[in-house]
Length: 44
Image 1 (cartoon, rainbow, N blue to C red):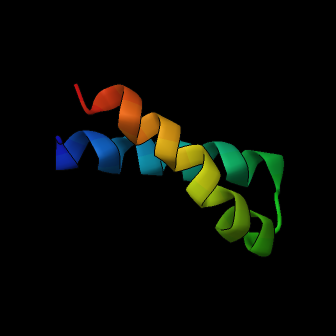
Image 2: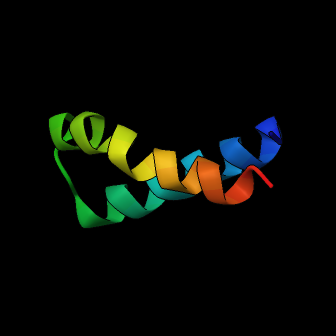
């Protein structure tokens, strides 16, 4: 697992969500469902 790559994904995800102006609670709730597949994809 590349920690730096995951950090970049997190920063990209947060940036996109900021542009969408999504509530923080929604981010926290959906974060796990969204990051699990991303981590699985990049954990090659």
